[in-house]
Structure formats: C-alpha cells, structure tokens
Image 1 (cartoon, rainbow, N blue to C red):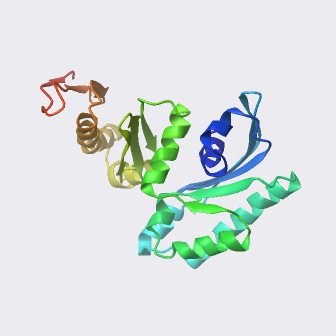
Image 2: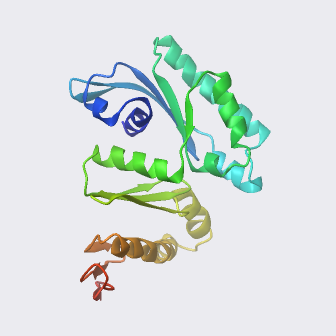
Length: 240
C-alpha cells in the first residue's frame, strides 16, 4: 500500500486518494529493491491486486564509482520492462515510477531518465524534500502535527508538518548503510546496535529540539524535554 500511496502523490491531488481511482500501476525504484504494485482505492478502502518485488542493489552498485554501471542499467531496463508488461496485461494506463536516493546521487541519472522515456514510463527522481513530503503523506494520510521517520536502504527521512509547514532532514544512515558501517564489521549484534544508536540518537535529539517536538524518547531511553522556544533542553535523564 505504501508504494501505491506514494505514487498517488504523483498521479493525483492528495484529496483524490479518498475517492475511487481505478487500477494504478505504481513502480518504486528504491536504492536496494524495486517494487511494482497494482491496486486501487475503492469505496474508501484499498484493494491490492498484485505485488512484485525484486532486489537490484542499485545503491551498492552506484556507491563503487558514483555512477550506475552498464550491467546495472541493463538490469533496470529489463526489470521495468517486466513490470510494464504486467501493467499492459491488465490494460492499465495509469502508471508512474519514483526513484529515490541512489538515483539522486548517481552522476549518470540521466541515463535512467532516458530508459524510462524510451519505455513511455513517467518517472520522477524525487528530491530529498519531495521524498520527505511523500513519506509524510504516506505515514499520516495528510494529517498535520505528526512526525514521520522513513528508514530507507541509504537514507532516513525525518519529516514533520505543522502550521509552519514541512520541516525535513535527511540522514545518510539507512538500513543498508547501517549494515555496512556498523553491523558487518562488529563482533556481536549488541555491539553493532549500540554503536548505531550512539551515532543516530544525537541527530534525532537535535531535530526534536529544533522542531520543538518534545518529549521524545527512543533507544537508549534518553529523554529530553524542552522548556521554551529559545531555551536549550532543560532536562536530560537516562533510564539505563
């Protein structure tokens, strides 16, 4: 459902999500996996017809040289062709794709855009801000005054919405990066988990204070409570 709602942000005004949409082919070109979902919003609910997921590892490929390699570009084309064949078999004309972090970072992202054009597939390589906003819409269905954390393979999107508008931040600490930097070289899972949380926690605390979102509590159970808009957090307590 997340892939479908994410793509509805591209295909329709958000208010249209509550109405009947007809069948939609949504393609999520993630840094680690690609997904295609065939579904629709109908009578106020979601109906899924088909879901396919394939591991492509574009982020790992791109991180070696800063570009997506020719073999990986070929695999991307073949995967998109397979997904579009599913759409065609069901007679679906509403289709779109969104690509995320690895494609933003790739120096040859234009080659991916050309692949999509040649397949007549509408594609958006989402900016950091755009991906954060879409993650917020998916997580909250447009309701204000919430904070959303979207943990992708390469990046974590932190986004909140209030009367001041969207506030968002990107951390290069997604689950795949975390595995490579913290878990793969560690002797034990506990050691890796502790190191990862020590790296991640200050970023979350800083943004919670900056965005006036307190109290906030997460592993390792450290809570900060702010005392005013301009004040620094005035209480810190550990619950180990």
